[in-house]
Length: 314
Image 1 (cartoon, helix red, strand yellow):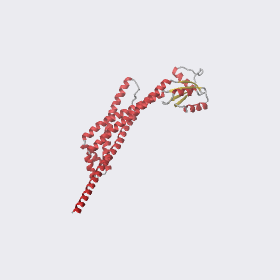
Image 2 (cartoon, rainbow, N blue to C red):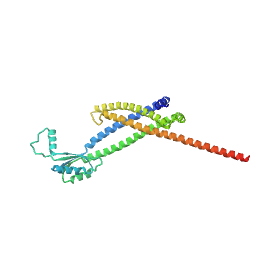
Image 3 (cartoon, rainbow, N blue to C red):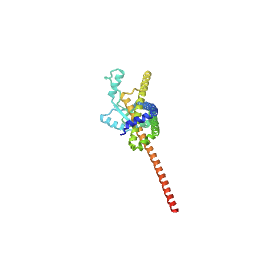
């Protein structure tokens, strides 16, 4: 009885050079994928910090608790507002006392109640400013229009770069794995034909080559992750020397997520490409066999007609 795992190792032993050359190519690809995912994590964290600095402080008149809740609902409905946080003038005074290291409890509180409004990246800052100033509850705004607009523009550009980078890397990995799988199937067409002609099902043959692909992906993604881990440690050490937090060290859970994401992506691509390539191969073989059968039928029918004519002439 045929065993898919035994057949898989048998195929690998026959094409050792192809297997190891594919392994080396995919190690490089997975190391690049891991670095890209790590970069995306850091870019998102960096962008989140930038967007959190995109805030407008809205100073309001003294209001009751009910009026504060009503105005908060009005602010949340304002176009361009992502989130907001309320801060009473009492809390603001406590922060000021702590910052200046003084006691102002005996003094009259000169501060106002305020809302920290965090701006979305697609906000029209000028229009938003006019809308907020038109509210009767608002006394004053503290905002940096140009800085917010620059940050929003930078955030949109980052989205574009990440989109094209993700698509480019996905296409690169897809093309490479497809070419390797297709080449492997073509290189072993004799074995495939022998198995097919001996009555082995198409599902069994597909599953055998899929297992080989998973083994290849598992080894290459694991070794690629080890290379990425070394590069990750080297980068973090270099950044720590520069005394900057533009790139942060990944946690264990993030590193595991990076490995699982790249491995899962590789398995999905392998599954899809393997089955599509095998179907195309079988379809082409079937079409060719049908053509040959049709040719044989035509030749046979012509021979029969010729024999009948000869018999009639005799």
